[in-house]
Length: 287
View 1: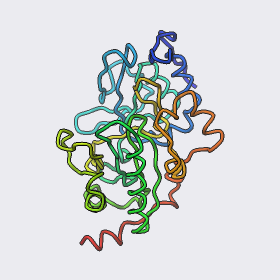
View 2: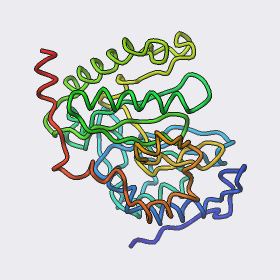
View 3: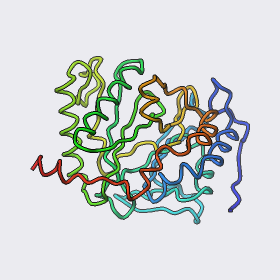
View 4: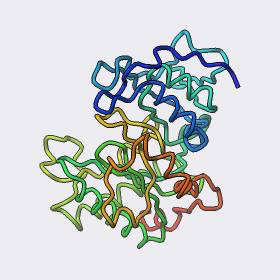
């Protein structure tokens, strides 16, 4: 393993909980084997918070000039992206105060072929009960067309529903399926859901985002941390936990390591090629 120099280990990154950079790095080290399957060979965008979550932040797509030469990068659309393939890269990013990791839906070299169909559920108002309700409606709609889905918290205020799909479809095809399902749900639950992209026009409806599922777009990978008041984590959960009333604040860097010891990686089926599902039947109907 390469040596990673840690600077300012006692710096407070989450003032509300007093969580330090070293505690964040300790979390990344402990969880690397769970995070890396979802960052490996994917374009990475990070949000850095040099002075913690209450300070200024900035997005970073391009690898900075001082990026170690042993870190893999990949050029796409005039950007030189970091590709987080190993524990050393993950820890180096953590030391740069990259508190949020966001990855593409596709692997490098396959820029037009997503590995999953994803629905991002983004609430317009406070509260989580209606987000859980919406996620259950998404699962039900997917089950009606024979698709098994998995769910995780965004680590912020929403939920994200993933459908592992056969590695043969373009973004154009998955967009058609996503649009059809989202619009069906909006027609079925018009008082709860919307596909209106402009937040000011949504009222108190929850936005079911299928548009985000596109080349160059990103979502946080499972087990990555979010720059919220609490060090919450984008956590895979069971559908039973959704039904029983789990909340984003239940899943933090303090609780997740013990959780995976108990439950394992609930998103592991997404990394098993045998669990990928075809979309041919629904695409044939749409055609």
